[in-house]
Amino acid sequence: MTAGGARRRACGWLAAVALLMAGCAGDDAAPSAPGGPTDDGNVSAVVPGPDDDSDAGDGDEDPATATLDATPSDCPAPLDTTDGLGAGLHEGLASGGQERAFHLLLPEENATDGPRPLFVALTGTVQSEEAFLAQSGLDALPDEGWIVVAPVRNNNGLLWGPWDAMRTPEQADLPNPDLELLDDVVACVAAHHAVDANRIFIGGISIGGTMVNYVLQRRSELYAGGIVGSGNFITTSPLDPEPLEDMVVIVAWGGESDEWSGCMDGRMGREAGESGDPGCIPGISFVTDAALASQFFDAEANVAQVACSMEVGHRWITEATPWFATLLATHPKGSGTVVDLPPDVPDGLECTTGAFVVDDAD
Image 1 (cartoon, rainbow, N blue to C red):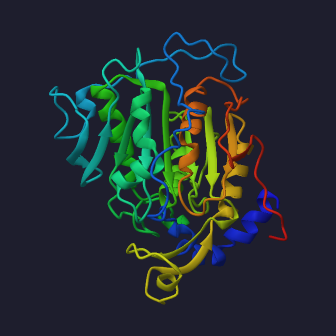
Image 2: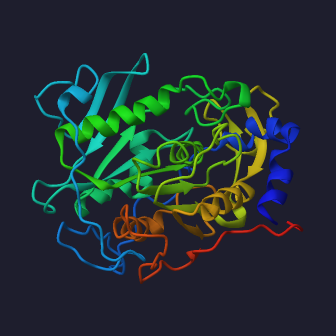
């Protein structure tokens, strides 16, 4: 299927409206998903230091680390002080006219030299932020020198509750409190900790992955890339899109079985989805939207796109988290659009640096 064909199939406006309460219903992993990355010793998340000159793309050299410039005054109240910002849950952040919160995970003091890569983690509808961090294995990244922050969703979605990631054209220009929160959280963390300006990444599952699609199309000057985990692409684009700046984007999905049934209130399963209750959907496949996102980012001149799948269903591909982190960390801003995939690809993970295309017969 071509990009245009896929859009006609998924995004004719009447079809899109149906999917807004369905495909937009991207939700997170089932509770039975494994909890944490595999520990077979084959893969570890590499964090280049400031003097690392490894080849990271088609640029002349690996871009040096650079500390993101921010001061406590860039932090919304009550964190706009010089008292520091420790690990843990931070609540009462004044952002976007709301009181917001975020979880912060920090590496050991001397885990790496120089500024640290930052990963912004977005959960879906069902999992709590802490549960998603544990299930995905993202909570292990600080052991490799990463800073990880998980903003807390606030049911701001105009089309699907948890994140304000999907909008009709009539809603496109309205303020987005979730986008403001992400801006504020990145600035706030950088005001208190040395964040590598060339290695700021974002990733999420389901509606969190949908939010990643939304954010990367509007903040490519800030983010070096991210991971779209089983997210929707339809209705995430701005009305007047501009060419994206250099990034590496991993579009990931759980194979042909990547489907979800359930309700906006957190009930999951086919029975809940077929209940007919408002905000419930009988089932939606995320494969077509993975293709749309893959084709979109692949067509952007400054973006290196990698499409990856594993038959795990609708959840974050936990088994690939260390491998994904290595790919991101070794491809900072300024690396170019050629991606050398890390070795030791996890068993069952299939990746391509070309666009993922769905057959018309599917």
